[in-house]
Length: 267
Image (cartoon, rainbow, N blue to C red; front, side):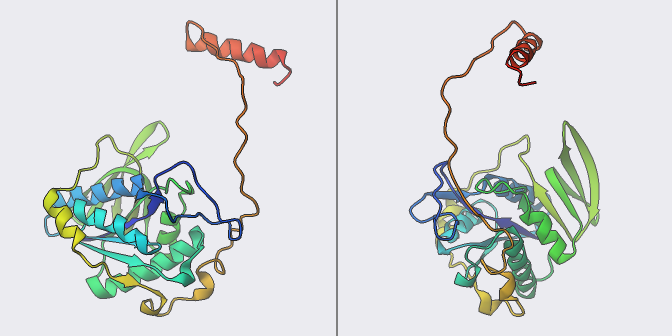
C-alpha cells in the first residue's frame, strides 16, 4: 500500500507580510511549521501503516528550499520518503497552478516509487484557507475524492472514511486509488521519536524542478498560469468600543441583541 501525503510549509505567525510588487506572501525570515491540517493527513496515513506495516508513506511538498524543514518533520513523524517540488518558474502559483504542478509531481513519483493507492491532503492551508488544492489535484488526476475526513481505514481493497458533514458525521466507502482531504479529528497527531528525528536530519531530500517533470506546461505554472489576480491587500482597521451582552441565558442575550439592532434600524 502506497500513500502520498501532500504537505505545505506555512508561516507560524498571524503577522503576514505581502510583497507589494507581486502580492504574494513574504516567507523569508518568518518561522514556519507544517500546516496543521496536513499533519492530520499524515497521522491518518500513519494509522493505516500501524495496521498494515507494508505501507509506504511518501511526503510531497511544493515550495522554496526552506520547505525541506517541513518534509524532515514529516520524516521524523511517520513518512518513509520525502520529495520537494521547487523551481523559480513555479513561484507565485495560485491554487490552480499549484494543484497542476503537484499533479505532475505525483506522476513523476509514480515512476520513481510505483503506483500510489491514496493521496492524503489537509482540507486547507492556514495561510490561505481556500480548501481548493486537494479537490483540484483530484480533478487533475481523475481520482474520486472525499473531503473533510476525520478518520480513514482499510477494509479489503476499499477505504472507509468517516467525514464531517455540518453537525453530523457520514461513513463513506471509496475504492482506491483515491484522494482524501482531512480536517481535525478527535485525537492528537503523534510526536516524532528522537531516533526518527535524528535520522530525518541526515536525509538529503530530492528536489524536483521543471526539468525533472517531463511534459509539464510552464504556461500553466507560476504567476503566468495563475488566473487568480490579487488587486489589493490591506489590514482591516480595528474598531474600538462595542457592547457586551450578558443575560441569564443565550436565548435572553439573543433577544436583547435583536431589540438593540431593531432600535438602531439595522434590521
